[in-house]
Amino acid sequence: MTSRAQIRFWLIGLAVFIGLVYLLKAVLLPFVAGMAAAYFLDPIVDRLEQAKVGRSPATAMVTLGFFIIVGGAIGLMIPLIETQVVEFAHKVPDYAEVLRGRLRPLVDTLLANLDREDVAKLKSTAEGYAGTALSWGVNALGNVLTGGMAVLSVVSLLLITPVVTFYLLRDWDKMIQKVDGWLPLDHAETIRTQLREVDSTLAGFVRGQALVCTVLAVFYGVGFSLAGLDLGLVVGLLTGIATVIPYLGGIMGMVVSIALALAQFSDWMPIILVAGVSLTGQVIEGYVLTPNLVGDRIRLHPVWIPFALLAGGALFGFLGVLLAVPVAAVIGVLVRFSLERYLASPLYRGTPPSSGT
Image 1: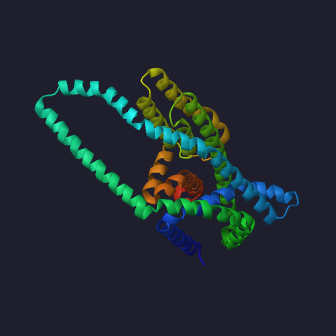
Image 2: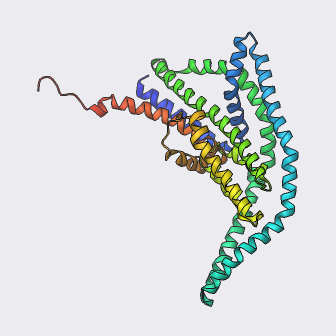
């Protein structure tokens, strides 16, 4: 088989794979989560193997320990989160009154500077947007309840992910050897080199980003709680977890926390404290945690990260957003390799002149 035929074969296989992922994106989340957990835990199992512990017992111990720690942490947080959510629900009318009091002077000033015709147009426009927003909300809720099957997705994530993690982790080395045996013989060493580069990139990003999320979740949760923000622990934990999505996670957490602070507090000092916690978290993430724990392992220009997030979300929804940065990092490795080959090829250098001319 010629090199061109091999390339055509693998490109067709890649297209089929991407098509299947797109068609099955609604059910892939627990499997992707299990694969990520197995990839994260594999070095620990390898070290236990080096200590003369069998692969299966080591896998069972590591998987069980990992999910006990995660489940225990969630179990300890649930009573606190439940208390904050209940208190927050009781205070929602007060928040609405505070917001109404803050916005009323602004609205009165705006209306005082408009004539009746402009006020009528503004009212008509607001009613139109309100109808559009209500329609969008109803449609979104319908999609969640019918197409999304939110409860079923959560249950499958909780039940299937540990099983997937165990079996992938147990057979990880065997799967790697099996895939290695499928590589085309003429290009096997080149592919192995690029796969090692991909593995180094993903390992640094996944494990480093997990530590970043953990530290920030603790920081935001404690910081918002000490600042007196209702639902501070919940917002802080979710903000820390959301930083797995670069840029967007921290920004969304800042917007939500400051909005809640504006609704809750009548004085400016607590609002400034909440905003200070958010800004401090952003600074710690950008200048301390990410440079030291993640570094430049993904080797992507900052412009490509938001593009990858938007493209992943548009194509594959929430799953695409989660996988956007790792997939973009892998594509970056392949693009750099292709560029190196192009710069060393006659396509770039041109055809050398013959010696007779």
